[in-house]
Amino acid sequence: MTQTVRAAADESVDVRLTVNGTPAVVHVQPRVTLADTLREQLGLTGTHLGCEHGVCGMCTVLVDGEAARSCLLFAVQCEGADVVTVEGLGTPDAQHPLQQAFSHHHALQCGFCTPGFLMSAYDLLAHRTDVQPDELPEELSGVLCRCTGYRNIVAAVADVAAACPEGVPEPGNLGERTLVGRRAGDMTHHAPERSEQEASRAPERVAVPSGTPTTRVDVSARMTSPVEKVWDVLGDVERLAPCLPGAEVTEAIGEDRYRGRARVSLGPIRLVFNGVAQVIERDADRRLLHVVGQGADAGGSRTQADMRIVVYEADDGTTLHAEADLYLSGRIAQFGRALAGDVSRRMFEDFAAALDEAAATGSAPARRRAGLRLAVGAALAGIGGVVRRLALRVRSEVRRTS
Ligand code: FES
Ligand code: FES
Image (cartoon, rainbow, N blue to C red; front, side):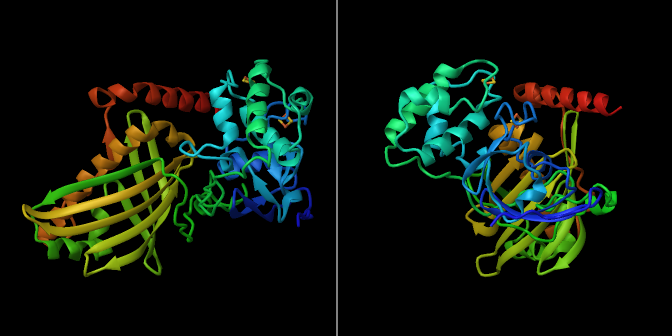
């Protein structure tokens, strides 16, 4: 049951709630709204803010199954609440019927009001299976579209109402996953008064990612070293860590879990991820390593990975094979599937070469692997727009804060 946590005006308190099926703990001052908490601390930026006065409805989410304006709720009022945001409604590959209908009817122009309309329409159709088409304009009037694209929005909702006379299907993207906050790289947001060092500290808990990955990587590399030697390095974190391009292990925290950081440079963009990784399976018979990891950078980019690495003897020599599901959110998600896949493949090639070297020499690779760098140029020809957008955004953020 949803309760209110009492706190003094200048005090920060923990609030426990469930967001899109994931239990989360946020550390907030009483003045922080649910909308800001979702966006700034849990990285769920699908909830948009328009008026911040309860007028436009763009910030609509479900709280305990009811539509609520998240700009009018304080996070401290949501202790024990079950919150569903637009991210929980569906996935790009398995959209909710409302999302499909909005797409089919092109029920958006700039799209800023779309999350609010989707959540509001869901609430309407979940509660009123008998709603009639001529009632929709009034029923949906709690959300404003500044592009005034109401006709297509109403047509989309009318389609779903007609197609689902028994009630609209439940949100399809709920489940336990890691919600990574901007500061802490964890589902727990740390209060501003905590030290930077503490704020950038990676969490101890590693969640196995769920849902549809941003991209899936399936790569192999031929190696010159014998299988046993390569497997030996895979089992030795001291020698393995320096093989990872741009990565360093900062602390072993027990149960085969490791804190560390990784650097990726992409043209003018430099990302430093603090994170944690855990080996969840070491199968010496199959020479298979199963690792999950998660990380976040200070700018709000978040990654999760679920990877299996196996080394085996093939006809043409030792082969290293990796399958990884990658989940990206925040700014880095703008890189998209193709680029994320390309960057991951390059990292794997670099990793395989270093691993081969470590296996051949019996020690860590002589040269510390530099962070992955992709220069602006031919390699970025296809992604120049993304990089430019990110660079412009970084510059405008710098201007705003200076
Ligand atoms: S932003 Fe919440 S109602 Fe406008
Ligand atoms: S589509 Fe632009 S605000 Fe509605």
